Length: 233
Image (cartoon, rainbow, N blue to C red; front, side):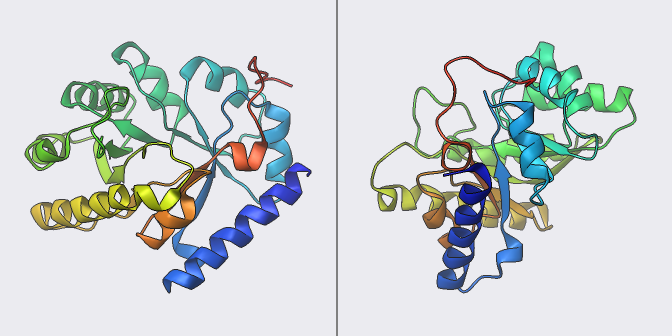
């Protein structure tokens, strides 16, 4: 199946999931995850209306962004180290992976230096997996106000990575808990949080049913990742 055909299938699946959930498809953004895929593949998707893409690694993003149209919006979904924050603020329009107060402070510092307001999502390790990053659900409300007080950061919502499983229904409780956490955060802040970034290639329909506004699709859209990154083709 060609890339444009896979995109059509994904869009149809999103529309169907929204219809079954009683939601407007306009509420759900498809975020193609172009990690290890070429700039050429990204450019091809722009011909079919995709304008927002997600990347995991700063170095790959630097190369790829320079070889893609300038009107693309890029989101960082991968774990962020302190020494990469300056580049992250410069390259990306949203950071999905704020997972500790210190990284929020570092992002805020570089955003201040460039006079940029930085939209972020707070990453929550809902399932408590040792291999995943993110705030523990129990600490999220305590950390919320110190991050919200950082003047150059804008908290737009929450993000999680659900455990992989061949049975998507098994991770429904993860998505339910993130939705409930967002509701608690909204109550504490007294303001709405627009986004729930949850759901990937194997489970995005369940995530949409539980309220996802950003589904991060890589393999189901681009196909299997190459063994070596080809960001500049």
